[in-house]
Image (cartoon, rainbow, N blue to C red; front, side, top):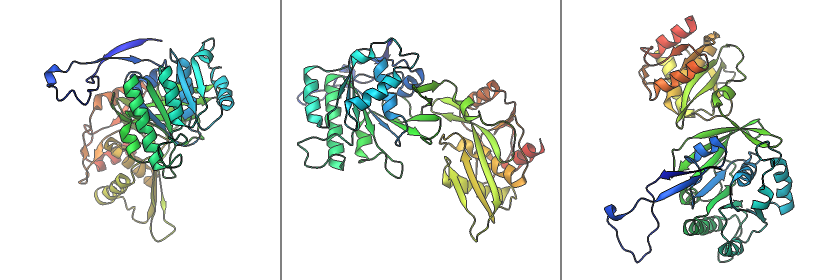
Amino acid sequence: MRVVAARTASTAPLRSNDGPVALRDVDDARVERVLTGLAEFDAVLGGGIVPGSLTLVGGPPGAGKSTLLLQIAARLPGEVLYVCGEESAAQVKLRAQRILDHPQLRGRDSVERVRLFPETNLRAALDRLEKSTPNVLVVDSIQTVWLPESESYAGSVTQVRDCTQALMEFSKRTGCATFIVGHVTKEGAIAGPRLLEHLVDTVLYFEGEPSGDYRILRACKNRFGSIDEICVFAMHADGLHEIANPSEVFLSDRTSARSGSCVVASIVGSRPVLIEVQALVGESSYGTPRRLANNVDQARLAMIIAVLERRAGLHLGMHDVYASVAGGLRVGEPAADLGIALAIASSFKNRALPSDAVAFGEVGLSGEVRSVSAASRRIAEANKLGYRTLYTPQNCADVTQAIESSLRA
């Protein structure tokens, strides 16, 4: 396990009687980030775990939240305390034994360093931690623990807020890095008040379908790094395995060129990722045509359809339009507009784009293709994976010309 030093702008918290301090008199604190051994996960955190940080891990049931945290606990040096409020210690051990079969964890002393504490009374757990503070604390989950001084039931808004505040105070005061598991609502948001996400330092969220083979972990908030960073895991019998090149995963099932499909060079966080945008256009069987989007912003899809009708002459008024991003990755940047427009036009004309084609660019309301950031990095990622035909803002005067040239090719 390696430890690296990183410069941050954080300082030791001031006591209430210290009063104001001039900015020039505040010394930079030197924070040592702890690497977990999972390179992709460390990158999502911004370079490793910051001591005293409070991280919220959310996602749908079965996404791999507890599995990931157990893998991290087994890799970290020093003592790790796992407060299990949802499962008994025996149930957690059953999962841990499966995870310890991972090739990188065999032979480690994880069984001795990771301590289980089956307790839902958070005050009792924190009182025990005052005697011996671990390096890392894991609370699974925040909806199952409660504080006796809060007159409410476990999982309520009051309990979730007060428990998170107690954990935040403990983490900042002792320097213990804390991870908490959060459930999600039916709408897909993390359960509890929005204050929960504001209190923590980092919010990590599992995206995609839990029933699939791959899990996408995205940083929705990060005080110690950039947001929208992702890491992709493959779920195996012995736990989660990191995927070093997400582009190959998202394009693995794209065997040949077919109508309604377009590869888009997207920027996710700080890395370029190639994704496949799929569209299906068919005549509407009902009075009002349907426009459905999966992992694509619904409002941008409606705007792109309007531009195609008005500026490109595609009569989509009586057609259903479905758009989706294959692989479960959610894409919201405007650079995917051109790829979505090409996929819709390809499906409408029933003509496939070239198999080695990649597109990116923002579509304006006047039909022009606007430039986007990090164009060179997008092109480099496309060339690395063998895509040579590029439809970019530099090559296209407007969306009509892009459609004509792509379908003609």
